[in-house]
Length: 490
Ligand SMILES: *Cc1c(COP(=O)(O)O)cnc(C)c1O
Image (cartoon, rainbow, N blue to C red; front, side, top):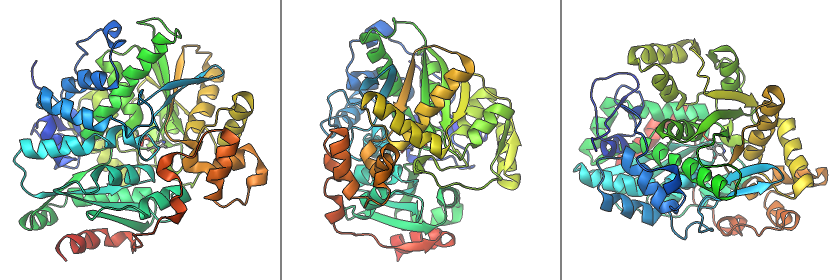
């Protein structure tokens, strides 16, 4: 098997191994690492039916992370996908009425980010060793709520690493915020930013490409890496669950082996759905990838018009992890659609200068969106019909999927990717089900949702309002760089 090398979407000629791409996080020219070619699976779909999650993860990851040995990969996988997950299936497909949900929220922080962030620290530590990196690795993470906590859990007290998480002060749910500011671990820092997610993400990306700062910190024994989905080490593990969902759809008799399915994915930074695109190009029979947006529907508008335009208001919604205008991973899709790095550089230059660009629309995707009221109605509708409680992000996907079917008549079997436990957004979920919960305390809402859903409050957030707050820093977005320096070198 020949090595898959990674290169920047923006063209610097240098090619790096998978492990080096994971250590660096982002390419030096500000582009994202992409595989030079997308490898085809070398197992059959029939064979995949007999694999458990770990075996399937190994079969998929070995094709992409080719410079890791079998022993290294199995070590990473076995440590990631163990009893941290509250179900042996790791990522079960469950049905409610005629809808299929791929539940990606059975890990430590009850959101889909756990799927990749349970394994990333192992992949990164292994990569650092393979590449002779002696410095401490500093993980800088911008979060719209879920990545931050999942990264903190993954990296807390991991030797040789530090982690600093930036979240928008008013842009995350009360439970998300609580989860982060109560984080233990002597190598962890959590900071609120006065600004939105895009501000935090842009500031962090700037630090990654600030060569003077990087040189200064390297002197002091630190290198930066990223736990955001700009890191290929986040993306690759997400491909696995698309294959895994497919095996479950076959086993439950919903589809025959080889039959195409659709996936509807609630989208923010375009990382989750891009993993579905990679799965398709590796050989999974996928018809359409339905990209579901909330009121921040930049992507929906793009798929309609071919114009990506962020010159609009940033809207706070009950699905905060999707409140994003600049979807970083979209750059990777644009690259794979044309493989022209000069074009990508110019398009990304336009985005940062004018806030918009035009590009040919990729027809493998369909865009849809749900407004806030459609999202909340969806939670109520499905609960009343089936007793299944969706979180607000999953509800965006469900409502978008229904609009897609109404508009196209496409009756391909569909999997809705369910990205968070409803307990993470308990207050909004309850309000959607019954307006009598309008003024409920967000932590009281956990117990109430337990009664309504007949599902116990997940262990990771039980009693979370009683845990001590350990992180109280709030800073201006201009001060992110100074803050990082102060933390590391005083
Ligand atoms: C991060 C997140 C999303 C969006 O995923 P992307 O990979 O950023 O597109 C959707 N729902 C939840 C609950 C999330 O945490």
